[in-house]
Image 1 (cartoon, rainbow, N blue to C red):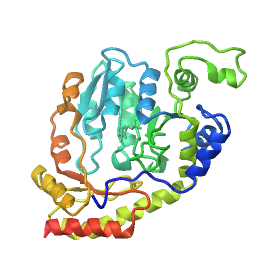
Image 2 (image 1 turned 90 degrees about the vertical axis):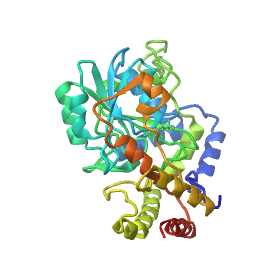
Image 3 (image 1 turned 60 degrees about the vertical axis):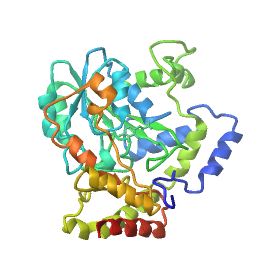
Image 4 (image 1 turned 90 degrees about the horizontal axis):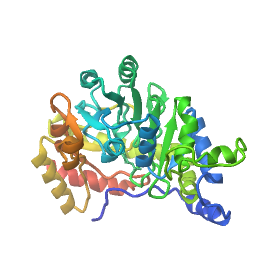
Length: 374
Ligand SMILES: *Cc1c(COP(=O)(O)O)cnc(C)c1O
């Protein structure tokens, strides 16, 4: 492959920060860099509390403990998402109720949520696909009416907004990912739990510290710490936080850089959309996380991936809808009819995009794609 699908972002300052963390002799969680990152998020996202975690998966798991998911509870989410969105809830005994997506944004269709609610429903989990916001006003309104929690899976949504509000800060809780495939990384793996409802702050610190009140002890609020609740090991290492800090220093620039690649792809494919040969993502506010094309059907899409491979360009598709997967059939159920989830997922293909991808590489991708449609 001449052009891979992803490269982890690296702005140049990460090495120096990681080295500094190593030399500080404090490399477990919530050190100097960890605290700096958390304060940065609390200010930038104006949220009540931001807690770094080992992954977005871990942040989602914390959220399920915080809202006290019990055996038999139902949780509403799209089937078109990464497995962790569902898995975190299944681990605590929930049944997943999948709702269809909107073909324009690939996000959960907010108009179908109400019909999926039963007396057992406990939460709604909107996923902001490709950093494009779900219709949060409607979702929050439905949640309020039925007394449900909203956990935003904002794994792909850092530095993107809904009506001026950062994604992940609108529901009761939000989760971000710093996996190497996301816009910002903490050295490969990492995540963040956003707490918007203050009732969860104290317990979140305890769950994150293996069920102990160690955070309160370090702040001098209690004179010893002990086991007070269930919990696990949900802190991010200081080395990862140091890497992440290098990215946060360049947060705006990383977004701008991705957006410029995204906009170039868009301009170069617009004529093919006019010819009816493909469909482009809807233009709306986003963070340049993902550029995808939709072809007419699965065989065209698979042909496109093979074609691009011959030209040395790696393109990928996702997700196999969760409701049709082995585990999804056991732990979940589709509410209503699957009008778009399967059909749209089979048409979609993602093009290479990363921070710092060269103009020449982008040109090669565009050229290879155009030869497919000729
Ligand atoms: C990447 C991703 C996750 C998982 O993130 P990790 O940090 O790898 O745990 C969850 N949900 C969505 C929508 C994602 O894109």
